[in-house]
Image (tube, rainbow, N blue to C red; front, side):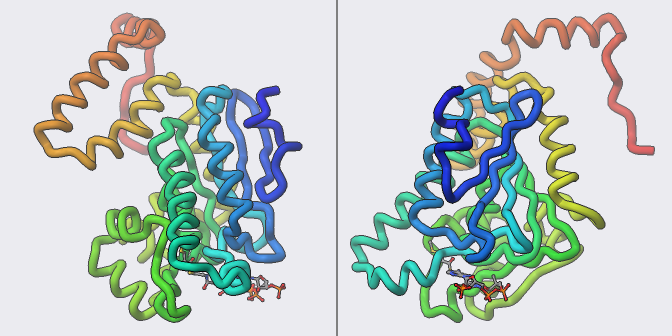
Length: 268
Ligand code: 1HE
């Protein structure tokens, strides 16, 4: 087994291989509400740096216990009494992890519950699809803690909900939950039951797409958002040129042409 996906090589994450290249990656410090310490970030970097080459087709990102993630490990941060230089490098490692997730080309479905706060929301926002349940709530308590964001909230959370809503969340500690959170874009799905079950269902479906197609969907869209419209159009033509002519797509196209492929129909 490739070391990247070997559960025995992780301590802060629980790695659970499932069928068809699907993996459940869980933050595994429930007694600390899955607060993100240095060790957890390093394990996220290791897993998501090597996931695609290790054959991972889709990931469900979850948290052990009642809460998805309580954000930065404030106790570790307080005890370390870091210099600005040190914390800048902590933030750079967070960016390394979350950029590997967003741009790595492996679909990541976050199964959210309980607190998704501070750096926990930054982590969730690096996933491609977020599923919440009735217990899930979102907040950016940085303002109350006397600190600022450092794991990409200024980029991804403001992208999801808009600059001024994000500023309000950090300034006031405002909490979003329920349908309002979905309406704002903090999650794409809300379920009555278990967000993990729904995330697994979505991941299993997504894993049936061709890996190169998923790579494009889960990296190209993010890259193109960073480009000018003109450059994005050029890049899209290139990606389309490669992905839309891949040999593995021929059978799917043929099935459509032969009328054996499922048609797109409205939900019943
Ligand atoms: C923690 C952390 C943490 C819990 N760092 N140890 N994030 C926050 O400001 C959120 C801080 N946490 C909370 O508000 C609450 O803990 C929760 C709402 C998440 C959960 O409440 P509860 O009642 O279930 O748990 P608890 O009793 O508050 O905490 C249980 C244990 O988890 C306790 O440890 P113990 O050893 O005393 O049992 C807590 O200390 C520990 N714990 N949250 C460290 N965050 C790159 S910049 C990013 C900036 C941020 O992320 S700021 C937001 C930080």
